Image (cartoon, rainbow, N blue to C red; front, side):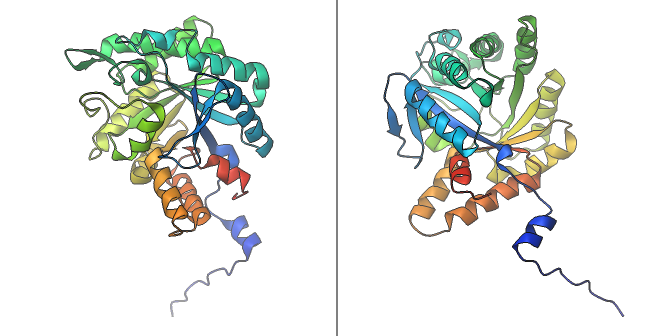
Length: 322
């Protein structure tokens, strides 16, 4: 006679003890949008609970996060000077450069700072690379990205995160950082970044929507997974320390597969559209926000992501959802 194994009946303590997937606040990275000026905290309509911060207000917000136990942050500059060649991306007057410098002067090693490295916030056209005849020029863009990464490291960034999807940029960044004695500055590559409809709210937040065309020529086709693996493993061979998949919810299969194929830690970006859908549904009392957020977090972890970039991070820690 076949005997069916008994399922262990679990109270809360036993459930936590035998859970197959673990997730903690140490996995979380919280993104910030930093802008010029002073005393600025401007809520972003498309992303409830998320705001633009001037550097002085960002310092206060980061201090609040540290007291909650949230210490890893990803910075995006908003309102940066825009030029055709994205030259302002490497300027010591840039918002990100000065934000990193101020935060590190204030908090030192109590925080871990990651900077987004991409040309889109610095170009007049909003594309992630330099344009010629309306086409993104990969080889003209890569040196700009490397110089941008170096400037962030010089300001004090612990990690740089190239999000542009140009070929060869990880190697160029690694070589330039190493040549300038920033061997310990890590690289988290947006290795698999799909051309996705989930980015809509971010483009309002970051003021980085293309003024013409789209980004499908250099971001990935969401129908392709084999191509995604090839791209990610090339970044690993070029010296990336962490590989990221973006977006997250619609690409759990890609996260899982990359975790099996790569030796590096895997991150995922729970992007603005994914965040906004949860927030708007919760505000309409259609879902239990805590349950849905944590279900998503554990889905990312279960798929193989050991790092999660999410706008939910502050709520998760503040409300002690984990």
